[in-house]
Length: 388
Image 1 (tube, rainbow, N blue to C red):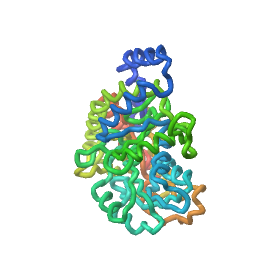
Image 2: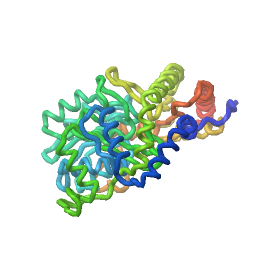
Image 3: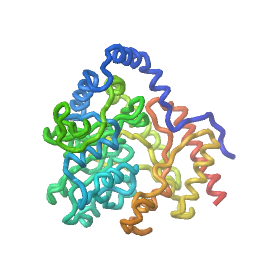
Image 4: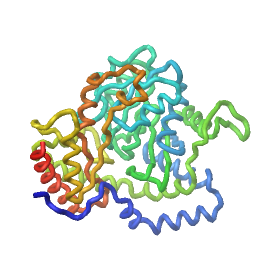
């Protein structure tokens, strides 16, 4: 018998707005009254605040996290003939941006316990064409950046941290986005620090890289109507900047709430047969943009994904929402057929794509909602197992 519960959404941004909506509205009205909608004081203020928060000298606000990756790649002069190593288990933009600048993405399999790139396999993927490594701190869980930077420095490679899901996360008490050569952030509304629309930023301690990214985001313009290169129109607008400045003040407390929710999930679900809870490395401080489990019972078919999808359906019938990030690994996407990857070549990524399920996760998730999710999941697992 499936437990009937009230609706528990995977994400509810309305609760955040209820908390700070008045503060946001006042700030937005000031920007509207100022007439400074593109650039201006609001953008400069947020860039400085965010640079200080991450612990870097420079922050370059831009249109999106995708654009931040492109600006970083271009500023590092990565293009045709070059290779960039990244993970096959991530949002498409991590590889898409490499292709967009004319370079070739090279995929390294993941560690199924952390979902991050398997560093034991990294050096084997480095060739004379490799120019950079793009680690992705997936679901808000930092990579082992000490070891990754050692490998990168050994081979004289740039490191572009994809921090789209990990704002505020730390490795050895250092914020992600401050460890590699460039950190790239998304402020898409679902992120831990989310705008009310698109937005992104690139962070660095290299003034030359910062200057290059600033030029590129303004059409390649170094001074008014003087263009040194072909660039983009990729600006963070003032309305989003002022909203982000407000939310930045709350980010650490929101992330602390996420960690508490993750701890409770881990405590209860680690004892549930067939559920593999995510692993956090000892020196990492994650921010849990998603709480993603693996459904991997011994008697379930694998790696078809049918069991996971059956559990998700039953969970929805319980009134609990969930998400699947990501059902198809990047190396097997149709657009990358020409790269020559074959099924089974990156087995860990292929397997987890069929097993992962992200449970409700947002700072305002109540204890009651979380318990309903846990009990609903247990019942859904039992029902799905009978169907199998």
